[in-house]
Image 1: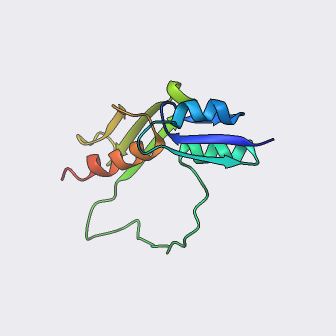
Image 2 (image 1 turned 60 degrees about the vertical axis):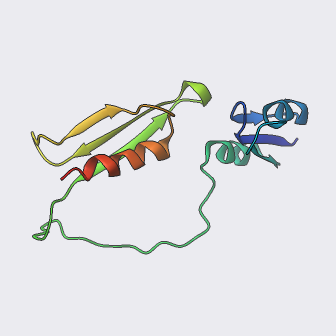
Length: 124
C-alpha cells in the first residue's frame, strides 16, 4: 500500500490516497510531497526527519576547558501534527542567571527548538 507524505502544504502529514494528498498540495505554492512504500518513511519525510546521508566529524573537548565556558543545551518536540509542543533549555551551571527552560513560540518543531538553544546560548 502506498503512502503519500506532505512536508509543505495546506496540512502536513501522511495520507493513504492520492486524492487526500492532492487536496493538501494542489495549488499550494512551494508544496513538498512524495510517495512512499512504508508508513515510517512517509512519516519521517513529512516531519522533516529523513535519515542523514552525509558524514560528520567528531569533535572532542575537555571538561576542564580553560579557554571558555561550558554550556549544555537541548531542544525537543513531542506530539503529532498540529498538537506538537516544543521547548528548549540552556544550562550554564547551578543557579546561573542565564539558565533557561522555555516553551518555544511559533511553529513547534524539534529543529526550531534546537536552533533556538543556539541563539539563546550566545547571549554572552
